[in-house]
Length: 183
Image (cartoon, rainbow, N blue to C red; front, side, top):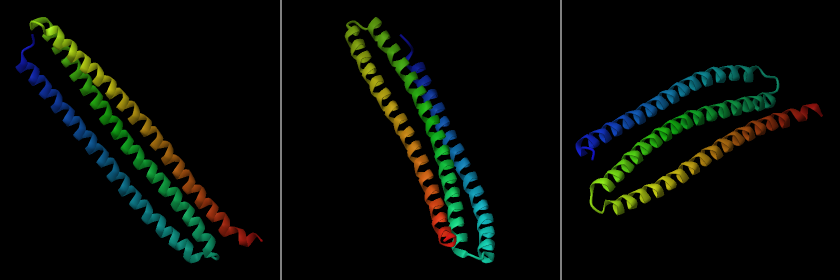
């Protein structure tokens, strides 16, 4: 049978490494979001300065405003997509780390169940019960993981569709603003 002290030390080390991985993933994502926000703020300032100049010199302010709205919708959609990508990457990294941790714990528990069956009188019954519990837990975690992946996929599709609708709406607004002139 394995030394319980060594086993506990291994589990603690594994948990510590997982916590570090979670912390690193979180910090990397925060860093990416900060960079994105700073870059977006810089671009927005430049864009708004340029747009104000164009608007002040425009002969037809309505058309100019419509074009500006369309450009803003494109920029907003790109920003939302970038934020979603960063968050999605972090979620995938955290899920992967969690799955690795769960696999290690399951392997250790199955080994412990085998040790119980070999070393304790009547341990086969306890070992079988533990193995059955682990199998049910594995099945439940697989279902949760699959549902999470499906939700992530659905969220991504929804975000893309929303961004496309925003851009199409802005394009339609521009067409409507320009249409009275063509008459």
